[in-house]
Image (cartoon, rainbow, N blue to C red; front, side):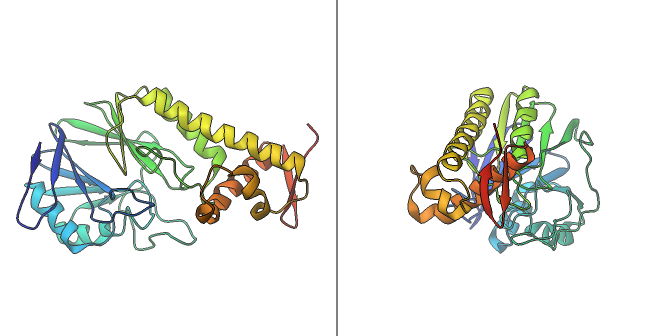
Length: 280
């Protein structure tokens, strides 16, 4: 079902009490744009209000059609959280999420009123929304489980139709894979990602992402075996032969995340940014 207001974005009702707006920030990294979700009917919780775009903030407040009481944030990357503070100032809503870590590409304006621990619940409008800590893509990443539908709102932990960049030092591949397995163990009916459409084939999608990451790790190991003492930038063409060379800069970040995981697993080490396998 879609509803339109004057100069407002299309609103999609996914289920009674769950609606989605797509922020007008499409790009190679964000796909069609950042998904903003609204929960509830008599009182509203907004998840990931996105970047500061006046038209999107207007749409959120217009379609809410009830007081916005809470603003939830999955993580503090610039396409997910910057509008949270502006929306809170406009509505008086409580901000819920984890503060931004130090580093580039973080929204340092996000200052939550409440920091959720794993398993914390927000009870509203006869539903409960449970925080599920999922570090990996970002150290402060949180997914949110809607108990009535058994849907997990995944931010950038799982997105529709693609994989995400794991960018050290804040991104961590080992934690990311562990968090994916945690998501699978929840046995959710669907995943509602931060970009793209609802994912109903949960096990298949999560298994594919984990297998893809482990297959890439195997390619890193093979490249290190053939090219010991190599810098990450020189390993990229060996490991990412299937990737457009224009994306090698991004690929190098994920490759470094794989190398750090191998280090954490006791399988590789670096000396002066030159990596080699340890005895297997």
